[in-house]
Image 1 (cartoon, helix red, strand yellow):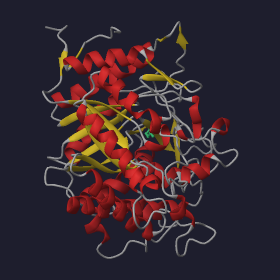
Image 2 (image 1 turned 90 degrees about the horizontal axis):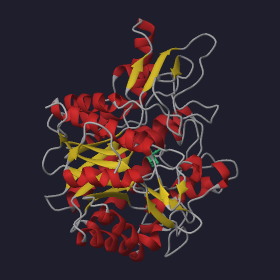
Image 3 (image 1 turned 45 degrees about the vertical axis):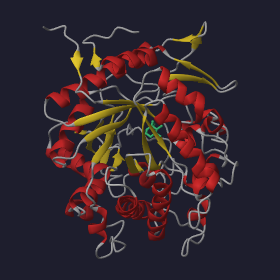
Length: 481
Ligand code: IFM
């Protein structure tokens, strides 16, 4: 029956995702102090249009309405992040009760609507004090290049687990540590905006350590039913040609984009080729005995965030244009590979981010991670697209996003058919929000946000996704709801 709908497994979790700094606003309320993103976004020239997360979607005051939106769409799960500086303003010491109360109330409201919460502990909003004021931080700063930040993270993880552990089962430690390390400390297009390749590699290691220490702290504080994972944004890296030079370029980027995290987290090792490729940047002396036992914690699931593939070749002598999707800086986010690899635009239509649409990358990654982490269930913890959505007559029609979602959900289904144990899918994002260095200029939401009035309008993609979620079936062809 060629026209039969694609049926997802029973219990498949249909959800949507957000992150604290991107939606909450209330940047100075109830004891919250600045995070590195507050500082960065308030620094002229760092974020398009000078946008900041001061108000964002005002979710801190409108959270009941936002839970109702999820419920009206019939979604069964919601992935959100906790703002570290809202619950532990200086990044050390006691927690702020009002901050924790906010997340308790949010979780209770979700549960009251039958929506499963998935908590992300760290989605990029490091308390500024930890970036500025660490021992040894000095003018260059502290933050993730410093080991102490990983230890502080474990303390914070224990605090949040203590507050929400009785009502949340699904936990992730970090979201996309690649961005924190390499965009934050390498190319500098993300907070804190440093451009030091050695610091980026130190940050990567301390994020791995934070994941391990944080997972341990969660395990110690949470009931046995808790499920602990991490959300990575692995790169589906493809060589431009099958020449040995292009295959080697692929190997280098795979090491820096993917294996720098999966090595320590899944296998308890940094691969030799990664260490050799980066030897002129750092000697990795910051990796201490025993660290790699800590980074490799048992995982109950792995979160995969996917948007677009990358195509690489050996660097052309003229220097091919950069299409690694992380432009906007003269500094490379690829320590040790910057002059050796060129990025090319992958084929496919482009989203408003100029990211090519290619669902095969998602299927490939789900199968690859099934092989790399046998027996570990997967969730797609982010997937979605930005388009230039415009309201017309009170509605927002976004057929491009429906096509994008249809293609990627078909890819998830194909991966499941071929043996991947994918347990759920979280659309990025529930609503339009602060898209980091792009400010409010890029709209990823299934729900349109009018930032003047804070009015929320579900786009046609939200209605379409709601139908898929309600039926657990994906039509073979796109027909908008
Ligand atoms: O908005 C981001 C999110 O915070 C992390 N993953 C990618 C999304 C789109 O760029």
